[in-house]
Image 1 (cartoon, rainbow, N blue to C red):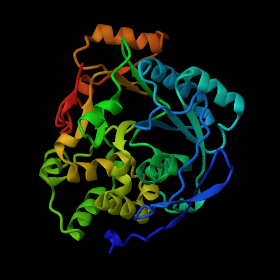
Image 2 (image 1 turned 180 degrees about the horizontal axis):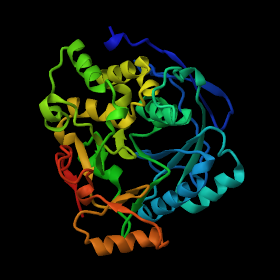
Image 3 (image 1 turned 120 degrees about the vertical axis):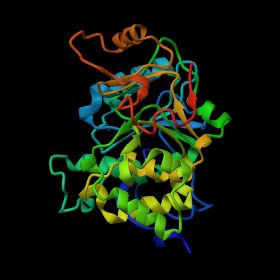
Length: 360
């Protein structure tokens, strides 16, 4: 019997299109992978992948184009020693050939780039949404990264995926060591760079919901969970991996039976849409519970910025770090906020420095 009574081979309302054949498919978040599945064929610009160790993924819209261009520029600079394939998921507004070619040019001829056309469904929008100020697509994004992305057939080609937001910028003074190779050598399941705290209004009911899941599966809170997730008097600390930069083994959220059970229970509850539960707290809770401490890494050997929040590479002096940022954003009127140690808050975040770190 599959865990959590997950419906086998459930067909979802969401759809994705094959860029070569033009055929549309309904998303399937199946419990057991089929052994006879047809290998996904992608339309790669610039070049075909030389390695399928890892892929870098974005979910983007036309409105994100300017920030996406900057993010890709930095990616091209920092991974110039070992370019990795990039996949941009979109809802048709990045289908224009001129746009795709311009983004491919930013990455350069050595970096494979593909565009994956997907369709969300308004059926998923809950009429009782608590947070009305958020556009429906924001809730779709939360669901996409929580459950749906690892079940897209493109990812079956790769061992790891590196999620970046369109406002995610990797920076530093020189190209960096390939994080996929680091994870492969160390047999790591998950990696992140910054630790944050979620807003309590976006985690309503999540703490109780997770403990009910543990109870239903006869699980006690693990040591890692107890060290990083409870706050005062067994309240929820809301400490999260800042998942706008995160690298995961593709099989982690797709094939691990208990993780799958948790993600499907969250999805069926409708709380992603009703309460705006994000992928960050949903993933952080289950990863701290189930994954051994030595299989989660913190990548501190490069600088990282999300929107206007940044962390320097560990060991880099602040003045040098600011100079590196100016090469990305030269406008002197822009204001950025440094999180020392990559933690928000700088003191009191239980995830800060708990997991092994990779430094310069």
